[in-house]
Image 1: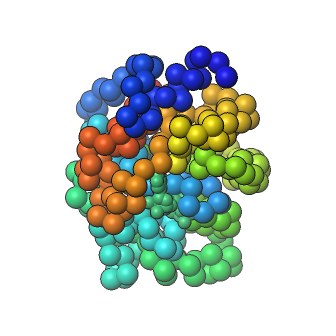
Image 2: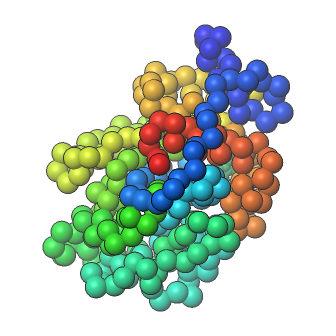
Length: 291
Ligand SMILES: Nc1ncnc2c1ncn2[C@@H]1O[C@H](COP(=O)(O)OP(=O)(O)OP(=O)(O)O)[C@@H](O)[C@H]1O
Ligand SMILES: [Mg+2]
């Protein structure tokens, strides 16, 4: 392992007195908002941190003055719940937008307790969409069409995908400019990513030529273990620059924040986990993948 990557590994370890590694500048304030960059949070493997990353990266970008919309695109509604929204009580959700081309996205948008962070919620209704969309014309473009009216009002729109590569995820990839792939730092993390990359390539070919992979994010990292470091090294070999320099450590503060239905950036603002997502937000902007 090179010294350089050794320094990188220590960067986000809570409590480690890591030497200051490269940081990313605080994004300049924006004079106006939009057009949005749409980013799909995808990995068909469950429990890798898609929803946690969606909520906390979105909240960090909102703290930096960006207008951010989260589209909850999982029938489990975890992103909605994680931001304190009881989507089970709602009649109009992202499902309504997919099924009714006359529905207005503005009627489904819910403001959260975080300024400049809004959500299009989802609930279990969405589980029927996959089957119902199959017979529709332009079935892969339903989400893209639904988002169009608000593209100019937000700086970033995140789509929190469910753990599958089915038609809903294809809709997310068709609506997106970029894909962000959270990857748990564990053995076999890379298994399945080839299949995801394959799907992304098919969508790029057939439906959405502008689509690209924005980055791979190592989550649930424990830098004290050789294991985590080895997995990250493997991901770096496979994806090179696509791997975000920022990594997200494993900490119980994330599940705690979920229970509190808040982003970690407001639940525990000074926790290293909050700082890691702020750093990721700065890195995303520095890469040019967000305004
Ligand atoms: N860095 C972390 N450290 C510890 N726990 C984490 C971390 N990130 C996420 N978690 C926890 O792991 C679980 C799965 O995370 P999350 O829901 O974000 O994954 P997901 O990829 O969205 O899952 P699914 O595929 O089911 O939608 C949650 O309980 C979450 O609180
Ligand atoms: Mg999720």
